[in-house]
Amino acid sequence: MPISVSVIPELNIVHNVYTGRVTIRDLFDEQTKRHQNPAFVMGMPAVNDLSQVTEVDIGFDEMMAYAKQTLETYRDVTEPIQIVLVGETQATAAAMAMYENLSAASNAPFHVDIAPGYPEVLALLNLPEDGLQHLPAFCRQESHLL
Image (cartoon, rainbow, N blue to C red):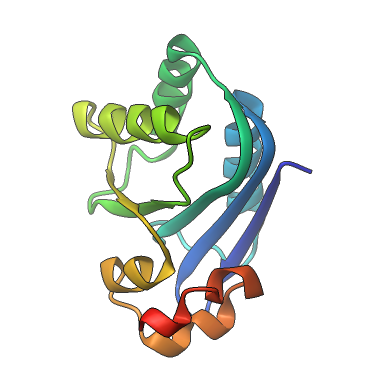
């Protein structure tokens, strides 16, 4: 399964972990899973971890169609939703930049940041250090930096 979607009420975030080859279908599936989770609240910040992605197979036109659908889904949101992308690799760098730039250039209600690791994720989302305990073990590899 190329994506794991976890709503973490203790941190008031959605934590998505993408693995393997990621396609546009995975982005749509993530959105569906997030909205179906009873703990999800519209406007929750999201952390999208791409550190385990081996390939991104998403073209510009596909991303534009996804952006259009996302704008419709979030049309009633009035405050920007913070999205933090973490785990940039050679395989994900271009896709992360495209996502960040499309969000900035559109009327999407998102504020996208790219973080090098989880200590920076905590800082960007203004979460406490002990927030790492609510995330998967692999997210705590840099806890010595806190």
